[in-house]
Image (spheres, rainbow, N blue to C red):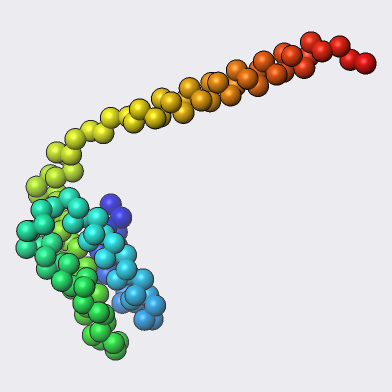
Length: 130
């Protein structure tokens, strides 16, 4: 969902163009991160992914207009990847991860610590006061 929101920030009809170079860099960095995350859900030979990765590897151009054009291209590539992931329904085919065995172990440790603390409390209450 976050990738869609970032794309909307750039490509939305009501959204203004970023004013400063720092805004452009921030949005480009966010879009690159989304492309990286979406790339993990698609095959490495996917043309849409290759195009998006090529855009990510390019340095952002200097200047007001070229940097905004680059940002729009990056957002469009991200939008295409989002559509590809949704169209293939890749997220639904991912196997359900089972709980790691160490999560049960941490609960055992917590129980043991609680038991030791309770035993110390009982022992301290039973010691006669002088």
